[in-house]
Image (cartoon, rainbow over all chains, first blue to last red; front, side, top):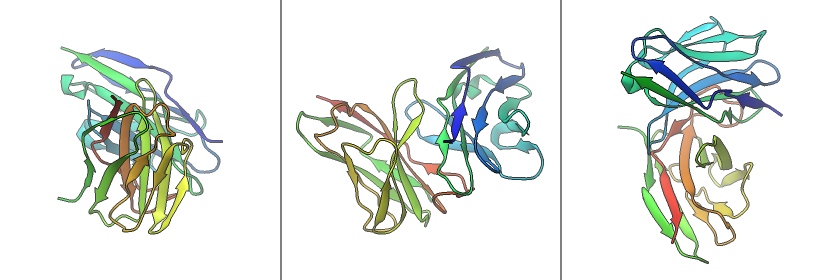
Length: 112
Length: 115
């Protein structure tokens, strides 16, 4: 069975510093990988995806993610965090034969 | 603007009562999904539908029912058999269903509570 792990319940970072939100996955074959963001009492918003190609994927709002096949990871990054980036972030993984599986979410807190 | 509309935003259920959550999309997507989100937990799939008049159970379908009579609509009924219905319910859609590499688009959710 496929699975997604987000090992940190919460990540704290100061405004202007780089941020990383970690995600590892277990998916057979070639994975489809996604990052979503959720603000309070809202649905999930799509940030970026990896299907194939370059290991560094660029997405919305200055976010990017690095696909590492050997480590089965897909960490979300941003060079300079904003207070407005504070939200709940979800990683999701699937493949050509299965539904998406979501991780448990990581709360990002960016302090001024 | 295209998107997914969920209603109501807040819903209260009495003991023994069935309630129905609405989900409508105008994205012309084939696939639609219902997820349950509990505090501190990720999303768990309740039901999904890849085509009109067809749907499949997800990981936690017990106590829930759905219908897909129109491409645009995928209502979820929380029945009295669901003993712990308090949660945030999210509806989503995507261009294709199982195995799709297209992102899912989400509505803004319905928060269901017990009276």
